[in-house]
Length: 217
Image (tube, rainbow, N blue to C red; front, top):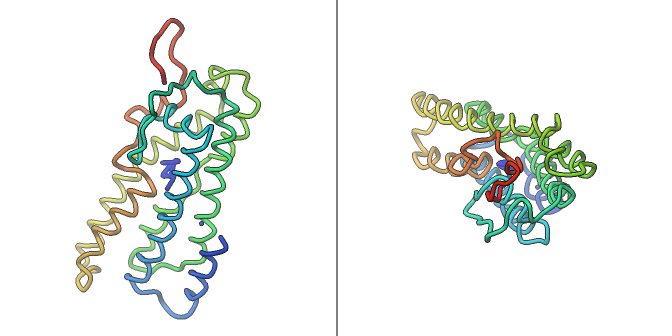
């Protein structure tokens, strides 16, 4: 989840859910069920962040995603510190998801797909830098923002890689007895990477409009 994505889209309740994962090799159906639970939880928490006082800065700065709209707000309606507060919560969502994922040993046939789902994005680093930036221009030019934008661009590449890996897995007959799994896995990776709603231009994420421009984000 950049959130994103990514992408972007987990502890006490999930600890109980995943407590039974240690005994024996996990089946494909069990794997999908457990990973789905992680992303459903992440989406629920992310939507709650966006509903908060500073949350819309995430949409104003990256554009609409996950069917969430900016409600007419613009990046200039917020400060970098607003982004800091919002990203602290997003970083916590990511950390919870990674902890939950670490409790899963995926079926070996889809270990590569699992690695694509759960990769750490530099959200905490950007959150820390946003706390000290004097304005959007300073934050936009920071190394932390550069790293974040590169991560968004990498998400787009990961979406392409995911589809290729999924297709190759299907060609090996891994899903022969569970023909519904490829579609469900695609839905899950859409949660994780927001493949259908990544910014068209990752380099523009949280970039302030030029002086004199009426553009909002």
